[in-house]
Image (tube, rainbow, N blue to C red; front, side, top):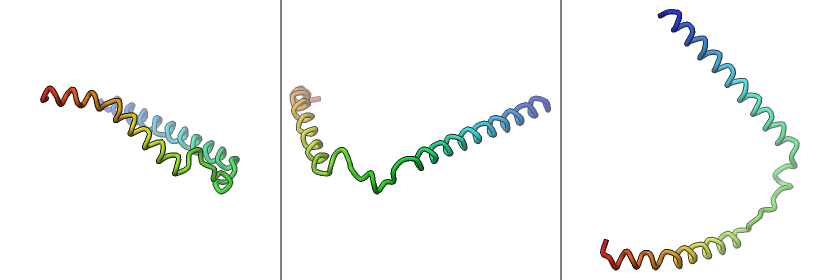
Length: 80
């Protein structure tokens, strides 16, 4: 029984060390990659502005309404 507990403890410790080292390497590679990118102040350009996003949301809502209104009316007529 003691051998099993010792094996489990050593396995857990080894796994913890391996996971810690891998995470450390991942975070280091991310920070190295981000330091090579231009700063955020130079990357202010966005794909969609606020106006475009609100127009898209409005069009999306209208499309969803047009699609689901017949379904809702059908279900309502059945008195579910």
